[in-house]
Length: 267
Image 1 (spheres, rainbow, N blue to C red):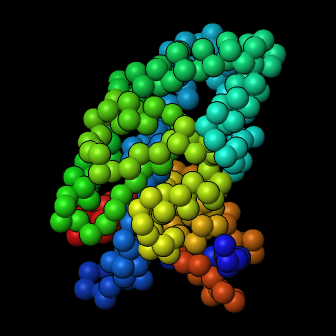
Image 2 (image 1 turned 90 degrees about the vertical axis):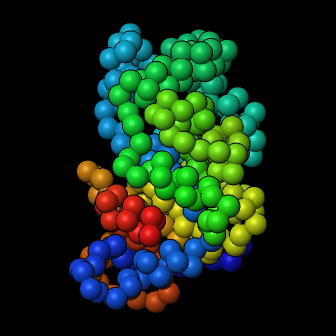
């Protein structure tokens, strides 16, 4: 794969009434495929960790360890789901569980089903998401669509928040690749599944150190959803201000609030 430019130029999606088409709007018009992150992007997952602990406080240290190991696995590609889960549960099993088998049983039989129940009770899709997915799933839509999450049970978790989808929307989780974002292979595999070039795809996510960095290294466009935590400098090693001109080759990145993004996507 060719080298990806090391510099990033951030472009905010915002224009006043009557202004000409923005760079972001031109980019979206020419996009042929979209990869959505799920957690934090298609729904606001605020407080989910606290609610998971509150549902069973005795699991506090187990949940902490799961998140710690997940952070250690960020960006790692184990090439298969079997390899990924073997090492994941091996790390989970050390100390607290005593064995990978007990860690697997807790994670798949208790923790993830509990997450599904918590999502069903407290969460719902962002405004306009179901309309957007129905439109993108229409035979008349020119854009192919995928949803990519680092957590398993994606279909069940989508159903829990009443997020509509059909077989034409591709669903991907760690069981599909045996890797965690921002590993680049899953992004390139999704592009291959779509029959598109990476530069024809827009990745939409809320974290530039996972969704954004994966898109960046794959040569895809990236839109960062502005949430409470803004981390717009993480991809730029020079930490330039947003209004500075990029020096040398650069890859355009986009940022904006959900209200602005959904207006663009539903045009």
